[in-house]
Length: 281
Image 1 (cartoon, helix red, strand yellow):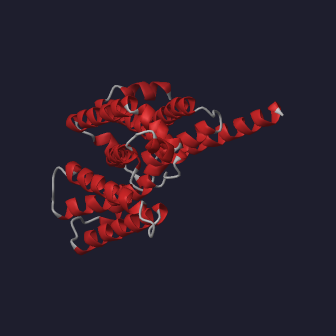
Image 2 (cartoon, one colour):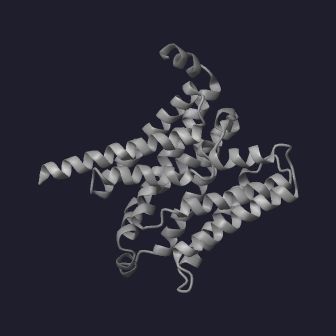
Image 3 (cartoon, one colour):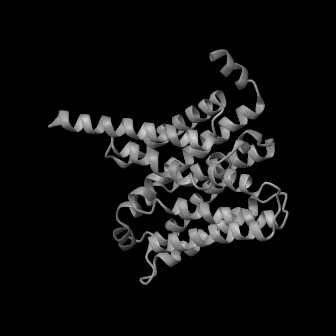
């Protein structure tokens, strides 16, 4: 198995997949802690469905480079979702359900009406649950992912204090002069970018797992926000790397394998936290 792994690691497409997978996992975990604490973790799930709808539109229009269309639609949806969620008549969870289900339904409807593939069911399944597209990335796509991921990381680091403030007490942050709406918008845009990039990795239905599992796993071991963020990033990167290696060696679906590794990691962290809690009593 070691020889087989060494052989695969010599291929450029495997190296590309690992680079992209690790960067996406890192960005997802950093933003995931904030979303989980703010009880807005399912925004990733909602926006991933929007991205699927945008991908369906791009497919119908026969666009060869659909990344920018999908990203633009997802960012606009994130802004609308943020504004709609602040409406007293439409709560945040209801807004996510409305936008995500509507986008998913219209996307699949368009793909059926304007049939663009002989294997529509297979294409839809691959988009929703991930496929081998992560192993067919071009050099340009990898560079784009690196640039956008690094940009997200830089924005997160430079705005860490403000993000921390609005995560735990948004009203108090506003009273101290922090423009909470601006930073909420920044978070929504960063999440949108990562979701579009992650669609090639785990599929649109499994993206929220990259956001939720590492953060919750870290919360069972640490209570400090900074330590949770750091450990969440470590868990996410390790799980993504192990999941992709396992997928390559075993021939299993990339997205499902990564999520499965995240689930196992969460269970181990949960048991560790449970045992440590009982021992401390």
